[in-house]
Image (tube, rainbow, N blue to C red; front, side, top):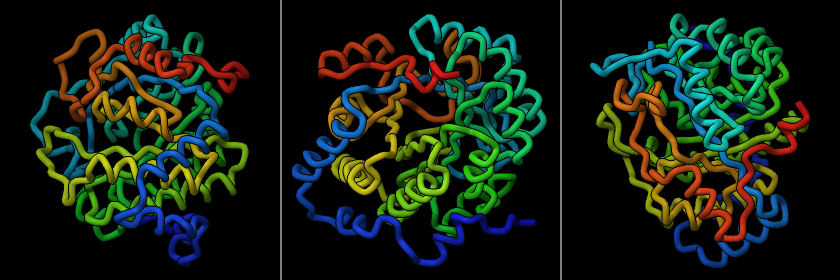
Length: 349
């Protein structure tokens, strides 16, 4: 049975807009150089030269959902692995030794192997030496999010992937994630349970109309900021990369279009954090951090246990930036930016 639409879904269906100037910024033929300059000025005014660094820590690639674009999809014949809590701690210790104090626990959607109890145990085990913990897993109920917050969780990341209901149904063919409205309302449930960082995003190339998805995620980000004003909101716009699924984007998003999307997002949502993953190549990442990006992953592995024992399980997708965290931090310093391993938000906990 499908979940009833949440409050943001109702807002989206109403046709009202919180970012009315965005469509013009996404039109073909805009002056991209001028837009990038303006976006850079806004970023510096709102965020200064601080760039937060984090690492994804994949705890499991077991999955009961079938998503056509994902390397963890249930029907794929790939090497599966779920880390024990002790192995999660070992991976985290290796990342902390590299400087990280922000970790994102990532998993496939498997309510048995990656249960609420398992996630709570991971957070409890990591919290004493990792100041900032977030999760990117399946959606949960209010009480589970409350349990995780009590254990020390700060953030929840849920990408809608695409806001186009028809395309969402075509690409999410089975499993818990198929429920569009449950997915869309997940950040509302997390915020109401006390989660203090909310991450949302779309997978560019999944839908034929990437501009419509960028518009929807910007609308979502501003809506969340207005309704949960004590909560930090971040947006990521990852592009589809090679994975075991073999999925190809319907319409590839060019580098210029990608820069345009991030600049437009910055201009209509100046207070929103923008996250950039290692999916993108070093030259583009180095340029975007000077324009709109406020948070970056570095030295990432997208397979469970991939930091200490790479090659033992299937990765979710291929990365493009293989530089070490120290090399990424050095790039930021050379560009006049401050790599932030641990920020004031985490220090308050």
